[in-house]
Length: 141
Image 1 (cartoon, one colour):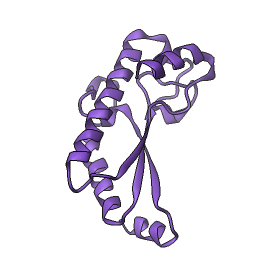
Image 2 (cartoon, rainbow, N blue to C red):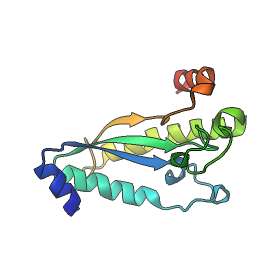
Image 3 (cartoon, one colour):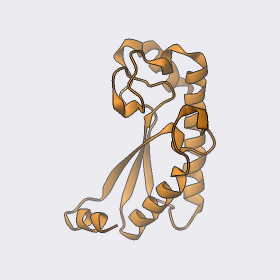
Image 4 (tube, one colour):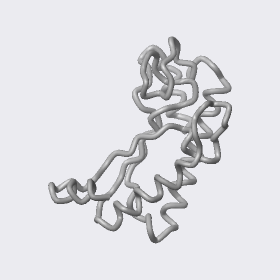
């Protein structure tokens, strides 16, 4: 948490926390090839922020199958945006957003983390090649 103290001294009040869908216990699947258990670390980070009077924007940075091709921030570098091309992965991504909403609600009920999350990014840098499907995702979420 010392790095947060330094940021606070410089006047930083908000941080963006990017993470992959696999962090969410409700949608985690070992077969996706990622490690589990990240929710506890996110809660700890939010508690650290609260103690310092800081806020967070949670950024769902990676969606199942990847929402952009050839980009490591999606969790895997792939030649195609399988999140948009595979209906099962698209549905899994929607479940991830729903799980994130429930997690934020849980944080709001916990005195250690309430009031810290002030925003959520649902889909980081989706491919422009799939704008229609992106709009569909946003309208459904």
